[in-house]
Length: 105
Image (cartoon, rainbow, N blue to C red):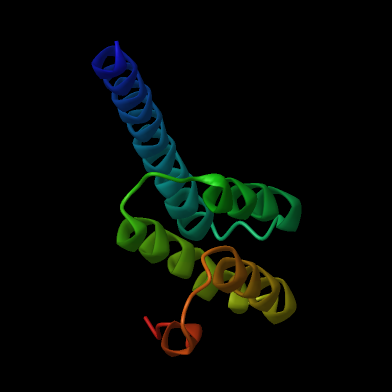
């Protein structure tokens, strides 16, 4: 009985992980599109940031890479918005001080 519950939980987590990976891929494409089209629509960009922050059960390094890419792009035209979302990222993921410096790409 307990093995069945464990298997069900394990399968549910696997499904959530797969859905979040798909979502991260969609959001990665959205970030690339924002940058490639020089989109500065702060409402849309905030929507993308918010969705990136809501993803769990994915490779953190992939998520971080996409997030930093968007933060660095937004810094070009709205430093306050970029800094606010960077601080949200630091707080949400309870990151150490050493990651607080943005990658200079």
